[in-house]
Length: 503
Image (cartoon, rainbow, N blue to C red; front, side, top):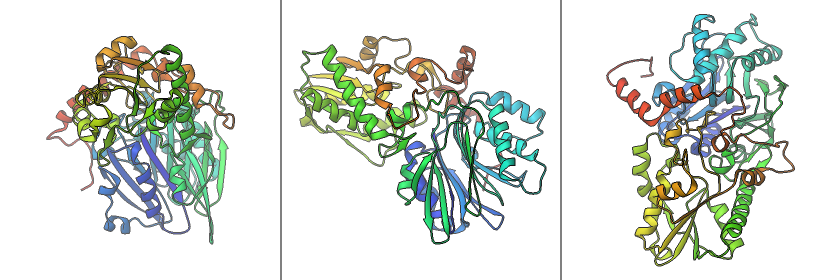
């Protein structure tokens, strides 16, 4: 999971990109980067770490230009080193840099073809670099000193023919402008915003609408599934549907967990979707457990608060804040490595004992993925004196890998994989566990003002909308991207140089 942003303005865009990345930080805490362009010259700063730590005043002063893009990264493919921090850059044709959110399901075969037939060099194992080189290779076929909007759209159409998976892309072509496009299923989000200045219109592309809001950009619309937009350096907007779309299926986990509640994705308010998740979860609890003995509803901050308030209200039970969150600890779900996730939970949350002591507590969370956080939070509640600890998830059981850019590659690391609800409850130490039904989750996210009629629910249902995910692919993915595999790669890299790195 990553966050991307691109800006075409009439004044320096460095600060705008930086500010946008700070509100997209929740989408990736491993690395960040910004690249800008001025008079045909590129300026870049990227590194591992948080946005606030990577960019100092001297770096910002060096990022010149009225056009640029930025990226925050959580590694789902490739590795977690500075060599794979984005944006990526290729010199030919014209000079192209790219930021990518998602995952290509055919990255391995594309990489092989790029080297063997396209004669492109790949410096990393990142699928984002693969995507960049596919785009560059196709754009070079235009064979012109300067590409037109039609040439760019033709190249992107060819990218769609070659690349499979979930992807949202922002790319900058030197001397031309900014490009954004989204996979044919619209799995990964991308929104377009506009702001009028004295010199003319300015545009921003971003993963979430919240990045537009804080900069004074008006949300125009979401980039459509299979659509590409091109904003030239003069601020003129061009768009084209580059591939027919038969199924628009945005990732439902954006609404469950990833996106900020103040974002709107595909014309669906994340906040309202989570309100409806709480309403429907309360209905299920009331239906299957009418004689419950719950004394208090307590959310696990932050993403579950919205649903928890609704559950408490509709059940007529007290709502209380029982955990205090340390704001300087990152999101544990997207921390790389089981050991790091485990260590961070107790430093992330502290308990208000009096809200637990002698009570039957219903803890509400947005979802249960690996179960690590849930188990430790339940332990914290018992240590605080809770008589009984019940647990409810606003999402169904996560039983299957997510292959479209969310860090759920290994089924063996998912606590619900191959387990019944009762077995999961035992594994995390809950006295009772209630999951939302997948049909109700979908109903919570649907909205009549949206053009979305279905979602990618692969991590809950095991149904992969791209139609190319086989058991063999999942087995290979688990082998390559599990926590154990990542740790082996970290150890193998020690003392070796495998990439050209900035110094």
